[in-house]
Length: 192
Length: 192
Image (cartoon, rainbow over all chains, first blue to last red; front, side, top):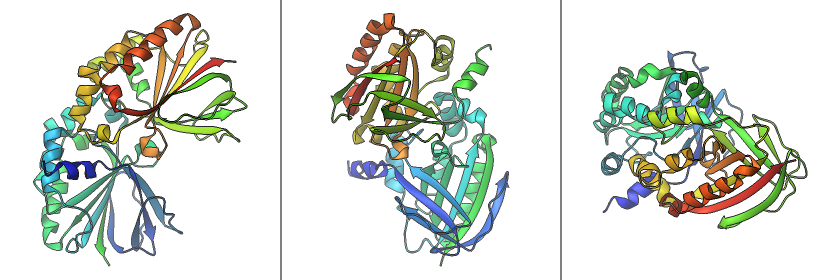
């Protein structure tokens, strides 16, 4: 299978990623919108550090870890591997950072109950697949790090795909899964 | 359901737990055995800190986080909630701390593949249930914390249940799941 190596790559060891908002960084912050719950302070730029790099003074800092998949089944993983593209594509000059936190009720559900809501009824993976390869995406887990959010999802896309990205976000927010989101912030950025 | 509250309790927010081996702590270390891979330095005592408590000088320190279940289905969760007992029972004066790390091949598997190995074929939950309520257990996740192990499991049992506990550990080590363990240390303790 040509994709075996790529799938393994997707499952690389956890990588700590730090998002630091402030005066420096290659991403210009266009807007920060509190979608559900309290927001984050405004800032001009966002710097993204991979590994144990320490950001300097910052308006706010969010940290997350890329990790193993939690819901994705083999067939879905193989389909994702054939369609999704890496971060850092030169034409993908727009980005979104969407931190979310889920409710205690979500985390009290069993694995099969969460999978049923996540994919069988909300089609989180299936809907996301429709926007590949235009939208590249990386998920960072942070609930176990004691952070204020449970997940930080980072998206990159070209300006001409901005409409498609808005549609993707709108569709996900209408799902049953999103009823378990009790804090969400939508941060939009442009590569400076 | 009488168990709903208990199930919610099991799914409490992640708790950081620090295991510090050295000269102090309520647990006397009886032995440290490297089962698979490299071991840990010997020490006299083990202290267990919950939350952000900072251990003093230590021979070694391992950290993990209690988290949401990753494989357990609703029916299994309900059965566990009816049978398992909490840590700290006065008669449970023996303990085991078993840090394990799983292979890259394990983490590259999809969720359905890991569940199939974990329970359908290895009966990890089913075997464990046979030893309840004698053996109390708490699982700590540490892969995403950048720790040297992926999991730290803490067990407590009475001296008269030591034979049953040995059997439990022996049975789990014979499973297909354990072929994906590439480092395991077995630390046995007695409350001092």
